[in-house]
Image (cartoon, rainbow, N blue to C red; front, side, top):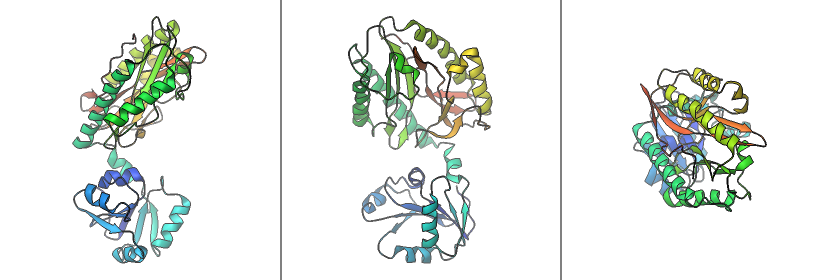
Amino acid sequence: MIKLLSSEALLITKSEHIFYLTNFDGEGFVIVTKDGITLATDQRYWLLAKEVKKKGVKLFDLKHGWPEKLNERLKKIKTVLFEERNLTIAGLERWKKILPKRKWKKSGGVVEKMRLIKSDDELENLREAARIGDKILKRVLKEMKPGVTEKTMANLFRKHSDELANGVSFDPIVAFGKNGAVPHHHSGSTKLKKNDAILIDQGVNYKGYMSDMTRCFQIGKGIPAVNDMHVQLLEAQQAGVNMVRAGVNIKDLSIAVRGILGKDQKYFTHSLGHGVGIEIHETPGVSSRTDMVLKAGMVITIEPGLYKPGIGGVRIEDTVIVTEDGCEVITKSSKKTQL
């Protein structure tokens, strides 16, 4: 839990952090003191706040004259910590006027650090999000036939995600043929051809928790060069998954996977992965720049890729839960490429 002095308060303005601390998914802010958590919102969200707030969270009504009442409630507070990664300069100046005569300090990412290790309930939500993502992929692949467009398939992911979950966790990436060489390709009007390559990156939002998975496929013979890249990448990706366990340094993990790709690592143009939770990309970043040791309960992706302009690209991505002696892979869709 957040440790504060009796003279300190923590102002939470990032929506994901408000949700994390209170289960509230609306507009407002949170004030944390040594005495507990106060969720502030207005009448538009009042009934929602009363329904979803966590036990022990106090409500504060943002009706006319609320700054004066908030100041009275916080009259013993001398220092306010704020989320420097979220609050703008203009926003901070506004808050200094709302809560005057206080010292303002950066929070240092205290809530981000709390979110690194997932609770049992969070892990189960993430498992369910992954299960739904696996189910949706099977549905969409049944419609994957020559002549369909990338955009049509991406919209199918959106449709099924709305039906089975709380929508998508990010815009689905469906890339055919040479478009696979663009890591974050925007699905467009390109049609799937016979003997073509397919890259799909998709995920869902389930009760505020995200899934993320990438798989590659081929229609007919596929593209030989892309097929060869897939075989090469699959070895590196599986090796990366096998290396994940508590105590491993993320930097060393990333360097090791890149080393497996040898001279072709120049075609691997992004990080090895990222944290996943109530945000699709969250701490820790999984790259050679992250000097952090993995701990049990962290949730990360392992997603190396190879991208060759004019030819195509492949990316294989799993979401895994770090354990003391390895990891639990929660994205379980087959990595066989033939459709």
